[in-house]
Image 1 (tube, helix red, strand yellow):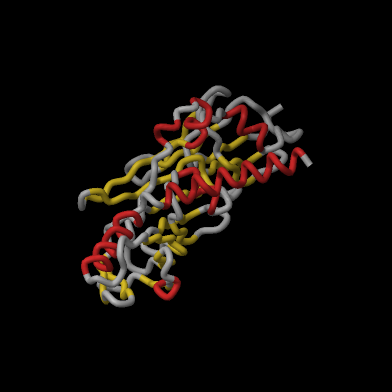
Image 2 (cartoon, rainbow, N blue to C red):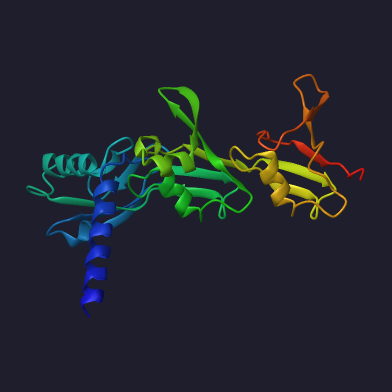
Length: 262
């Protein structure tokens, strides 16, 4: 019973925090608002912000709310009701049912890509969680594309580094229109005299000896001497490198294990 009480309390606090955060977001086209006026049930309605950025409210007609936070929209409606002589000292309350104007796109290698509404203040990690997290094929970095003051720019966030360091300053707070993209994880390829030749996920700072382990180790004919890396260079050609066990691989490297001569 005590556990249930604590869970209910935590849920209530979470919902309260979400509602408080939502109150800070500006309204926009497509948002759905539940509006009520204390003591005047006939003025309660659900309204959608139109393409003009306005809603239509009884008695006072169109009210422009685009760009206003809910508290500002409440005051705008109250002023019109009072100045028109319709309601004395009106107490207007607005709850946002759906923030359709404030959406973030989460694309790439996540489990549930799509557009997600901002129902409060959300960060990069929040949105990745809403999208079901990164899929097994996804990489360790997220690309955040934003537009601020008319200028598009992007940030690349290394998620494991952020978690290991505990530096949440890079866990950016998002705004409507932001795009998160998770790229496919880089791969390397291994073939020749190994147990399991094929393509494998390239981990950060992965070495040749770790690549051999990922490939199941050498088969009876293989030798650790003379391992080679075939690597694309910047001129469209292929470099062949005699590799040591501690050499660090790069994306799309091909590791070749030769057959022992003895």
